[in-house]
Length: 548
Ligand code: C2O
Ligand code: CU
Image 1: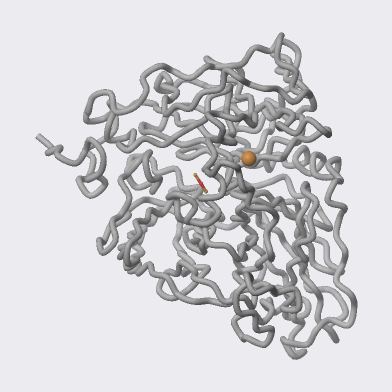
Image 2: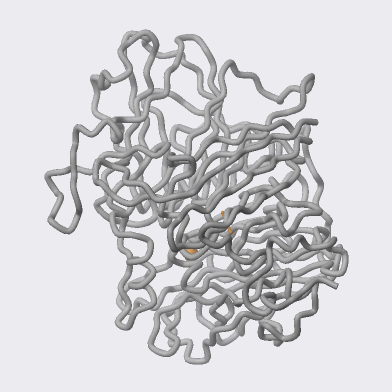
């Protein structure tokens, strides 16, 4: 196994990714940042220099379980103190499973300022995938706002509440095109001919087969991705082989990754559109477009056809159907434990707490503490966070998930769930009506678990029934994932084994939702965690702390 070393410098630069000039967080001058390429079993070492003038940073390796290195998870407030402006911090971890992963900032709402990239882990030499292809490409889909992450965060925590709204653009591998004729003085400088916002191009050699590794790191949007005139065969999801199935459009939620196989088997005399489109929310964000360039046509030549319109935004059924189609590849089934030791039902609601709009789980809205949990627990730094455990469920007899509720008993807390080491835990995500009293309204939330993959045992509509729904679980060939949607007014059932010593976030991957409290933290086997590196310390109660 090899050691892959990277030297990164994080700073702000002006970029015009969607033709509108804006301050963007870059790594070595780029956004998306450099792609990390490794082979299974390799060690990745990233030496990160924070060259932001007055801002801290932390980077999370999304999908990497960090077995034995929970301090390298990069989650500010959970596993480390933020990296101070001017400091250099070294992340070191093992990539123990082949697959498609990502990295991104995990501090405040920094992710959506452009700090993200791809992390691709190949099989060791001599092993082969259960599918074949000639070329391998990584693409990250994103949505894009013209307002800074700071302005957005300020609006979200203001009274009255100012919602971030729908994004201005959709980016494909960091490139989009805002229509400059819609620019207002507030928008900023818009230049449609800036080469930074030329369309992203993927070149196809006719007759060849492509593996596209598609990840989404949207701040808000659920997306549909499609390639005009081509079907896609889904073969991998979040690092696990899928029982292959064919789609025309791939639904993808923030935090998910998929590999699809595409054959360049269409008329080679022209180019084709690749389209990303917002689904599950209505708005007027224009679709993201990239060019699939059939070699040797000119890569910039626009396809002669209009881009496909994509599915209707409110076609929930097709999205649910795709979720249900994702099963483990028959030759790579990791059988789930048939029973669990603990069931935690997590009701997702919108609340108002002290006049502020928040998201809550079982009426508890999550706040990050000043002292990261990993350090506070491992080094027994006293009660630096609320010790009352959060509830394992909600009152299912009195709470009507279809009705807007006042949730007057909602609170804010930084308390966490402490799990018995090696126990089997079911997490049931329960969706509900938002605070909107005027219409039926429930949002799709993609939930991401750090430190583990979970088995996706089932999805259902309406209120989860503890006695009958588990009988319908797929205990035969469920896919394992690290991110999964809970659909509107529905539930999603997950199972995992709490066998990775550390403290791990589980949260909605919508940047503003997590910022507004939509998450929890789990602890397991803290006494088994090895010696913490002092580089993760320096904030909160760890400030004066000296390792004995
Ligand atoms: Cu990709 Cu905690 O996030
Ligand atoms: Cu959410």
